[in-house]
Amino acid sequence: MLIFVVLIAISYAALMIAFKKGWGRLKEPLYDYETPENSFSIVIPFRNEAENLPELLESLSLLNYPLELFEILLVNDESKDDSEKIIAEFIENQPQLTLKLLQNNRSSNSPKKDAIKTAIEIAQSDYILTTDADCKVPQYWLQSFNTEIIKNNPAMIAAPVTIEVENPKFSTAFEALDFLSLQISGAGAFGLNKAFMANGANLCYKKEAFINQNGFDGNDNIASGDDVFLLQKFIQQGLKVSFLKDKLAVVTTKPLNNLKKLVQQRIRWASKTPAYSSIFAKLTGLIVFVMNLAFSLSLLLGLFKLFPFPYFMIIFLVKFNLDFVLLYNACQFFNQESLMRHYMVSSVLHPFFSIYVAFLSLFGGYQWKGRSF
Image (cartoon, rainbow, N blue to C red):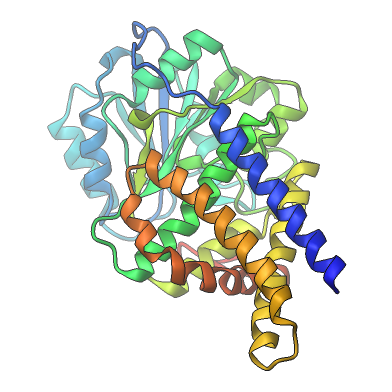
């Protein structure tokens, strides 16, 4: 038993230390942005987002980039609310922007991938930049991507996303910390040259590369994964990918503030893990799953004196301290240090949450945007 516990602790520690090292290797820019020269097609699929679209559209109108070098392609995925009306009013009030409203052309089991593909088919720019309708983009967003392209010429650029929090209650903080753990782990993997995870709410890639790699072909039977599977496909084909560690390129998204919706969202994210092509990604998932399972079981069994307390403390101290260091680094980057006030309780509950989501993703479906998958 002791050997098993020690092996789990060592494996998890090695993984977290590696992510920390990878995160440290990523350098923040000096903000000496290059002269704008690259063009971007900003692609935004949406479904029943009337509540969120006004903030997104306003942030897009404030972008500090030449108007002739970007277009906005909004793709309606069978919305039943006032989303189209809101967009029409925005177009009327912002005639200087090149903005097109498209209807999703469904051809697969993945509505979002179909929407992105629908937009790319008419996109006029060299680079595709995706985000979500419940997000806000920063003013220097395109400036940052343009500079990264000029300096490093990657085929794909993943960039940071965070949940918007202000004096958060515990449930929001729990959701935000969970999200940050994914962000810094994914970014750390880029720093290790083992990239396997990106977020479609802030993702840029060459239109030509997307077409040459046949886009989402090969994974369009999986509802989600427009970001992860495309990243792994690019890497498999030897294309250069990078992570943009720029605080002025951070896209913010709204918290769900709903446990049921949070579980459904995380099931959707976890359900694509078995289809990963990256061995490092699968190994990471396995180590994290086993660690969370060991933590949960040892704590429950320990309460009934069915598991040695010293063994649980090994697991607890390794996980608690290493997660703290990694999350604190993430909170510093995103200026969200206040979230760490909730870390103690979150660190105990999170393994149970993760195991629950993992089992549901393996044995059941999920609800997303009013649809069942």
